[in-house]
Image (tube, rainbow, N blue to C red; front, top):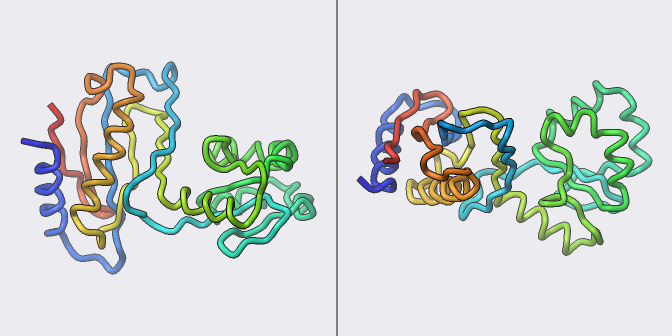
Length: 209
């Protein structure tokens, strides 16, 4: 059975579950085999066709922007306490920075943002010339992207919301799954199986071979 058909069936199954009072997240779980996450560091951003949620973005920037909470150079001294930085990490989904501030960002925030996987990255998050247009483009891109970091043999990736149409969820899943296959050393051979679930449900298995 084609993977899209299986996903459609799995979503129908999940939607029969108990109704919750919130919009549940749809998670994709890819269980890997014959794969050593320590040897093969995978960390990539995948652009998905359908936005999952508007992310809360903070920016180490000298200019203000309507969609980004500004942390200017003058604010850095407030964050000499690690606890304060940890609060920031909890509050925001994503951090961006102008390139000229990156050395100071690394010194002040690196010890907390680094391990949390939220350090502004040259892949998606560091701006050479921060102006209105480039910040708009970057925030749009961030809201359309999903980060995949493989730290263990099972990868859990939020790929949609229960309120989305099945077709949208399926398209997001296949986009992310195919992008992950491309970076796995043995591609499909490294995939043991795939599951999808809602926040409060048990996972439903998808056969990939």
